[in-house]
Each structure stands twice: as structure tokens, then as C-alpha cells.
Image (cartoon, rainbow, N blue to C red; front, top):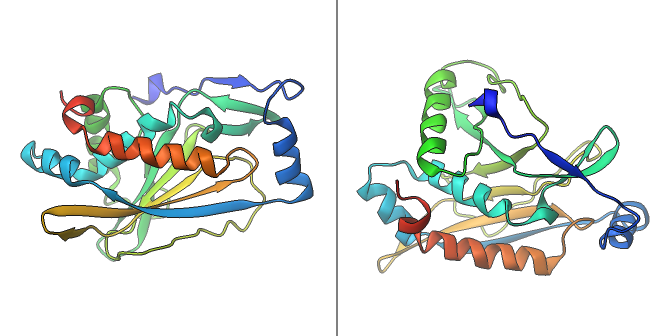
Length: 222
């Protein structure tokens, strides 16, 4: 998979970029980011994964990554001080070792879920017992954090970066499922820089992601 890793990007011409003034305002005059958490109905996707003996996590990673390909405002980063938009973002996620220390892994995004799922399982098998926080070294700049805290159901989650941003990719964090009267929901948080996205962009993203979770047979079927 890594031999065909998609790292393609398009430079942003800031002089004609519609986002230019907002980018300047939210990076220079009033540096601002925001976080939003919603409860998504994952009933249909969870049912589909169980019926096909597939883990839910790769389906979650895939659906978020697939939707990101439709949202260029969430794929903005710097490459050698040049502002660019990457074609795709590859999901970066965490796993736990037996001693409950964490490890950060990533899997190359592929438009075909079966291919992505196979690569995900291969990464888990290859690195699950390798100690350290990052057993699989990053091989591209277009990795996006799509995390999960399956042990707690939260109403808000906000990561706090301690260094200046080099990328404007969102950070996702999913929480513990809650099932009530046959409906299963999952809290999902997004944290993003206001320089590249506004509330309307995040609203569209979550509404579209709910549609994705409602049609697993169309998006995940082999």
C-alpha cells in the first residue's frame, strides 16, 4: 500500500483564493479554532459490520476519510511554506498495548473499502505488539487524526495542541456507543482551525457523515 501512497497536493494561489482574507484574519489578527461534538446514529453501519464480521473501527475510519475527499477546506496544509490542498488524507488512529500504553498507527486511504480494510488489518497485525508511541513511522504529511475513546461517552472533547500548527487538518475523536430502544449513537468531536473552515462547513460535514452511516450497503459493500 505504501508504495502507492497518495501524497498529491495542489498549491493554493492565495492572491485569488476565496478564503484568503479569512485565513489572514484567523491566523494573524485573531487566531481561532473551534470544537463541536454531535451524536451520530450509527445503527445501520454497526448492524452491517456485525453481519459481515467486520470491525466497526475501519468502517468509521474509512467513512470519515472518504467524506474528507469531498471537503477541500479540511485538507489544507503547508508544504515547504507553501499553502496546499492535499487530494486525500490518510487516517491516523491509536491502539492500546496489553499494558494500556498507546500506539499511534496510520493506514493508507483507499477509495475501495475492502482494500482499505485489508490494509488496516495488516497494520494492526504488524504493529499491535511493537512497543512505543509510534511503531509505524509516518511516510507522508497528509495524515489526519481520527481517534476513538470507546470507554467513555462524552459530550465534548477538545485537544490542546502545544506547538504552532503546521497543518489545518481537523482532529476527530469518537466516544463510547450508547444503545437505546434499538438505536445506537456515537458522540463524534471535530476540532478545526477557523482559518480554513467555518461552522457551516462543519455542519455540512456532519450532516453528510450521518448520510454515510445510514447507507453502509452502498459505501462499504464489497
